Length: 260
Image (tube, rainbow, N blue to C red; front, side, top):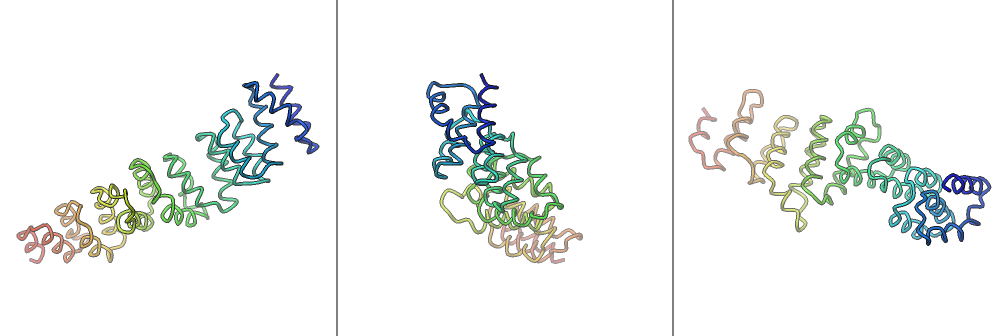
């Protein structure tokens, strides 16, 4: 009976005697009990009495415990195990995960979770200006989380989140890391991505004009004619950059027109 197990675990937990239930709970698990309370109890025992590795293995491998209950139990004991439990909830414990990673300064874990989670609403929450830890998070997204992103979708959603949050300078940092600084094998899909190269140059045209000439010189897979046209618009006045692009793309007539 689920209520009986919950009450039993609760009473033993109050007096720090959970461990006396271990043999009984393990026998229930061995008999393939479907009661989450059995696995909540076991998780708590392993967190309290086992090595960190034993507890982590259980939290990663077992699908029967309640991540919200076990995560809350772990927070004051081993907050990294709370992160492991909350991740297991597949999105149902996002707020708790963001809170525990922020409180404990686990911004690398938070950044990696956000990239893998691919949730625009969650990104919007953490990239709000009111988040006083936004800079620490962004540093970890740029330095560790995005360089290990496994899919174009993860990169695309992260980039879109930065655009939606109106963070052009941070977006430039992010795109520079992907396109100019990530030389590892298998990352060509991002380095040579036309849309990302276009976005980097266009963002710089609007937010950091001094970088534009370097980008149009170093990059090769962008839409030259369209970008040159935008650069030479009176709003931006980047005539040297437009001239360089037209020359690079062998568009002599357009290059001369920029100079006139």
